[in-house]
Length: 410
Image (cartoon, rainbow, N blue to C red):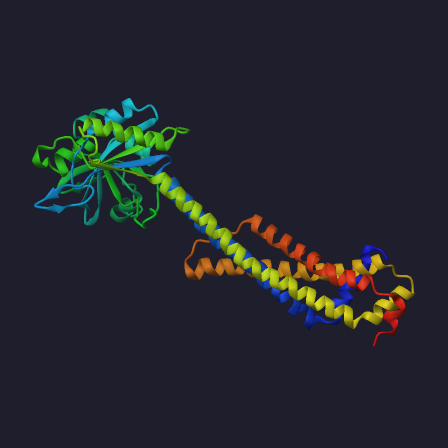
């Protein structure tokens, strides 16, 4: 008997028992759908982390001032304004692994344009900040050297600020007021989206660092060159941990920190933090897929159970086919094809259900989901393998029946 005839016989046998075949496929359908949906959820979470890493910039570290104590009260990290622009320059010049070290200050303020106003984050930065954050412009130009040294009243705005103040208009060359100081917009930043903490990174206004210090944030306590943070971008291929150790040692020397004393600053390696989160997301994806695969295993056991029942019910049919010339190989192939057909049909129906489930979770639950071709191929291959694995024993049992005993079976 050729394969086409065997397939036709197997399909006819499954069609005769439609309800039983459908119930048998149910375990495979649910298992495949669960695997595809769970992998889509996990892959979506992993993609979200990758987007966050990209939005921050690669190989990025942030240095913030340490804590200070006032009247016996420790005020926490960032309270002691002990970092300077010279520290950032020293890091960039003396540590070969560092590509740029960008000093910055941050504050908040009301930005006014005509009849519109918006409260936003105001950053005093240098062009190195945009390189460190890998943040290009969508329109306009960067700060020029005379503007940086002369505390010029120019600004670069984020997409959110541009939309809130100017709607669909081009904000370039428009005038805004920040703390009653007029600024001319010279550029618009490209879109960044949300940070890993849910903060809108596009809700910002960038001005030259000297402008922020001299015109907006003031010179409290004579700290003329004090800064709030240093954004450090490490060169591609350089060791982040080694660069972090060298930065720590350099800053301790510059701040004359004695042996055994705590650092007067904090270094946050954001890339390592997000990579750890990405690893966790990948592990969670594999865990969800493994749990969902249990449904496939249950479905495979269901197929084996039903195929054993089918062999028992069709013992006389098997004996009759052997009596008229069917070989053991033909019987084995027939029952294997039946099991494989159940698995594959269930697998394809499971793909449809899994894709619908992934779409539903993303649409109604608001979770990030991402369907991958690999998960679909894996689910179908797994279902086919289950059909062959769990169908082999019933098929082998049927092929070993003796014609005389099979024909006498009641």
